[in-house]
Image 1 (tube, rainbow, N blue to C red):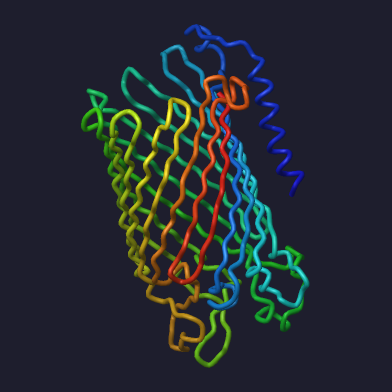
Image 2 (tube, one colour):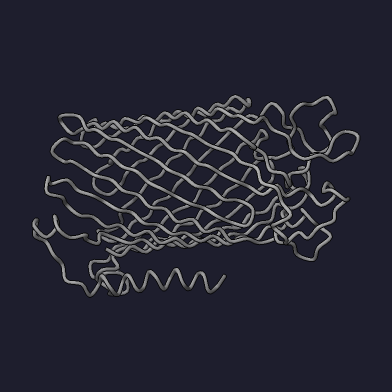
Length: 402
């Protein structure tokens, strides 16, 4: 894993060296002919969580997990003969996690393949902006792969500004086609647990498809106040559970999580920003969520970037979330044989959660560490706590080359 992380950092440094030495071209005629580098972002984060409601062991047991993530995002642009701006966004991400609960899929091994995994997820996006008409169209492709899960995604989008350019309407459609290996708990496999947990050829596969459409409208109310309304419709179809999530019934028998094969989700939200002078911004967000599994949720968050001087800012944030349980959730050994659907996954239970922390950003006039083109460094830390007892911490670093 160290080699993978160093490779991502190496790519970023090579890009930095390449673009830092390239001469700038500012004429309009050059922009129309050549693909121009705009910026690159390197983001690294470390996440750690713990709790005692693992779905792998039926709603009890450790939820200890760590995740180390690295991604590099590179943006290019060019102008065509009709004075339209084409932007290209290439991102490659690598996550590596270790999970004590996943290792319980087969507790007979010292350390099974499920104990740790690496996820690789490249994506490519394109947009074309017509500033004369105030319109933008876009499309993108993505791919994600790990030991037991593969996903292919695609999206299209369209945006149109109002005549006075103070408002903008955006429509977006997305589709994800996923395949996962059907990895059962060891005691539920044919033959009473035979087979090699590391032999991926032994596993059947299941599929799930997700389709979503979203509409949003943003409006500049005045020089200080901006607001955005967001609505979305998401439909999922296929195998929507995970085969290694155990469920224990009242008679102490063990089963595999069984969920409906369709799910409809409807989130609606509003986002607002208010500028308190030149140094303080208030950013608020509220979202209501409903789905046909019986889950209803509310999210409210606030972030307050504060500019200490022209080059340094801090941004404390807070988010509160509450949800009801899905209709077919019950804790360990509470499900009955008459239940058609059943899960003991506490992500689908009733709970409240809080997430709070702060970000620190510097944009030195002479560049970060005196490197002119390395123009931004941001550190963020957040602590998450849930009423079920789970808690986590995340710290991230973002470097921008422009």
